[in-house]
Image (cartoon, rainbow over all chains, first blue to last red; front, side, top):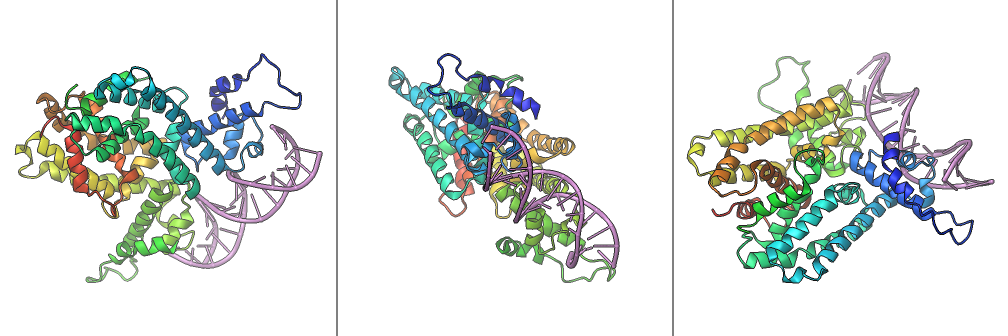
Length: 218
Length: 218
DNA sequence: CCTACCGATCGGTAGG
DNA sequence: CCTACCGATCGGTAGG
């Protein structure tokens, strides 16, 4: 699929040109690995894990069919790496939000808005295929790997709980906090199925609508 | 997978015993077709379309590997039949709700509650694998079939619009109606990912939580 | 609906 | 990271 290869040019072009590597023999494996991950994320998202072949991925990264197995032990391992990378990045972004200087002094409503907005961007931003793959392809993981992913998801959700509890306490959120978290994140996660960046609504519009829908008043 | 075959015993046993068929030569093909659909729905939901083999499905329905193709032209056609059957049943149930004698005289809040409750049951009720397959495997359909499914989804969503518009007009729903519909149905649809019938919450609990979350007051 | 089978594709590997 | 390849599996079919 040459289209996919084209879409990944940017990732492949990120190879640093300035400082030369320590030894001539050290190929920039790190970057080929990154290109493989980006290609896998794009294809896993578009076609699903089982319908994507390792040959598809290799071609999208400009390699021969056997080469992905030089970087990853198996197709499974590639899927897990995509998910882990996606959740690592998402966690890091949300932690930055929560730990930002002014954040703690904001109202719970404003704090929820920031979480929602970053969540939408993690799901719908350009090139952000990693977390959608995690959301919709976990079924294809082996039990051990699925547990590790579940752990990351749990950490991610724990960032939401203090805000939701505060909103519940102040009467702005009436549903039980646990179910509210599942329903709210579900509403956001489902946007992966219908959001179209080229169409009407923006991530800002979605954030506004979600806040208006979930909160009793602003 | 003998486990799957066992789970499908009930469907296979529905074969009518009383009145004999018109001719001796008329095998109850209709029922073997039903068994295939139920087996396919269960497996497509559990493992996804691409990861399910037609041999899996045949075995779960108690057939040999080539036999599904006597009833369905292709694996694709089987997937489409599952989705069409699921949406036909869901539409029929929701139409019955909307057209029930007292329904029109209920408050918009109560009408939404009925739609939500039936929707949860369509997704989470025992043996209801057909609609979840439609929700999560449409990617595997061919363009023509996907269009037909989209048409059914559109009909289904149109049943919600009058209720949502009324709630918006009365101030019980603050988000724009179009985005509210997408977010609300997303919250409900995502329950397929986490709901566990053997655990704490019931469909009633979910319905209560959803109503409390979405509406400004009851 | 079964038997027997085909052609294509797939994940993965050896050896360089 | 490529070349060349293997064993297994898969969707689907002919002929009964």
